[in-house]
Image 1 (cartoon, rainbow, N blue to C red):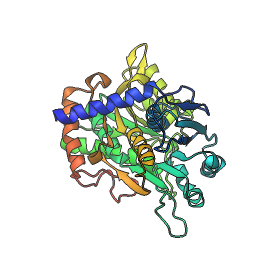
Image 2 (cartoon, rainbow, N blue to C red; image 1 turned 90 degrees about the vertical axis):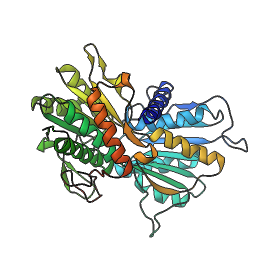
Image 3 (cartoon, helix red, strand yellow; image 1 turned 60 degrees about the horizontal axis):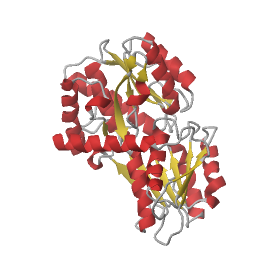
Image 4 (cartoon, rainbow, N blue to C red; image 1 turned 45 degrees about the vertical axis):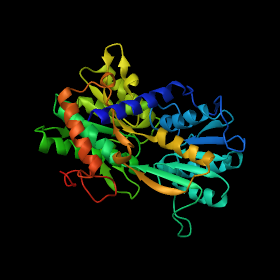
Length: 384
C-alpha cells in the first residue's frame, strides 16, 4: 500500500498546486499561461468553461475542472481560457449559454449534467471540440457518440462509499448524513454510495451508524423518482445549505458528507458554529476550506479527479490524438478515491487501514456500491 499512498499523495499535491493558480472570483475574466505553444502549428487554443451559477471558484466541482484548464494553460502560453457563468441553474439556459459563445472558442468545457444537451450544438459545429463532464451527450437522431465530444462520467458512488465507511467508523453520536445540491445522477451516486458505505461498515466493521434524512429536503432524480436524501435544490445557495446543515445537527448528526458545490459552504459554516461536528469534503481536497478559529471541521475529503482528466483531453487536442467518446472513470484509473496525506485529514489510523482495505476491493471490482442507475440499492450491492 505504500506505493498506492505515494501515488495518491502525488495526486493530492498536484490538485493543491493547481488550486494555487486559480483566479479568485471566477466570473468572465480570461486567464492565460506563460510558455509553450497551444498547438503544433502555433495557433493559440481558445478555451471556454461554462459553469453553473456557483462559478469556477466554488471550491469544489467547477473549480477542479477549471484547475485542469489552468494547468494546461500554464504550459501552453498562447492558450487562453474564459470562464462563463450561467446564472439561473436552468438546463435550457445552460445549453443556451454554450450556444451563445460557441463561435468564439476552439474548445468548450462544460462541467455538469445540465449540459448533456450540448450534443445538438456539437453536431452543428463539428470543427469545435467539447469536453463534457458528469454526463454523456444526449443522443441526436439515434447518434450517441460524437467525434468532437469527449464525455467523462465518474463512478461517484465509489468516492461516496469511502465517505460512508469513514463516517460510520468515526461518528460519536451514531448519526451521519449526506447533503447534496440537486438530484442529478452524479449527486444521487454520491448519496447512494455514501449510504452503501455506511451499510458496509455496519455489517463488516461492527459499527451501528444511522443515516439521517430530512423528508422536507428529499430529492427527485431525473426520472422524477423520489431518492430521499437531503437536497438543497441548488449548487449556489449557502444560506439554505446552512439551514439544512443546522437541521441535521439538531437531529444529532455529527458527521456530514457534503456534495453541494457552493451551497456546501453553508453546511461548513453550520459545522463551525456547532461543537464536535465534522464535514467530509467532496470532489477535491477541501481541508483548507474547513479552517476556522476553533480548528478544522474537515474530517477528510473524497476525490473525483476531474482536473487531471480535463488536462489530459486538452493535451490530446493539441497533440492531434483527441477522440470523441463516452468514458466512465473509476478507481482503477485513479479517477476516484480519498485523501491519503496525513496532514490533510483527521481520520484515525484504524479508519485509514480499513479505507485502504475497501479501496483495494473497490478498485478490483469486488465491491460495487449502489448508484442512481446501476440496479443496486444501498442495502443490496455486490461485495456487501
